[in-house]
Length: 167
Image (tube, rainbow, N blue to C red):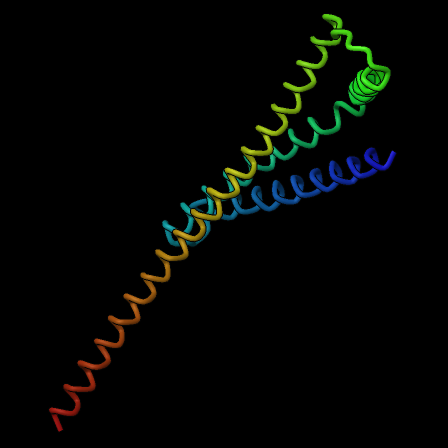
């Protein structure tokens, strides 16, 4: 029973996160059109980031659905029942092979959760790509700011020397 509540909470949290990041990404895409004044590199970065986050939101929605389906379709109950039957058989010392239907269900169920874990892996991979892209953009911007600052200091220094030599 507690696993159902925990799963419902997790699915709800995933839905909220996906909705929030979808909303933010759509806002960013609307505000980075050419009609808004913005430097091209910043516009390009923000638009790519918004698309990455939209894709990740879609994957998060898919993950929430994949996590809820076994519980809503009673597939989880069937898997638990099969597992309990197999444990009971082992306790009784019996070693009967699974029926073809049980084998097929066990393969499907295992494949289903493997696919769910692959979706989770894709979410984490895309999040890591987003973090590294943000970091690279920040470093590029920092280097540009530093170069601009050096150039400004150099101009001020030259102007100061000219004023001092002219007196």
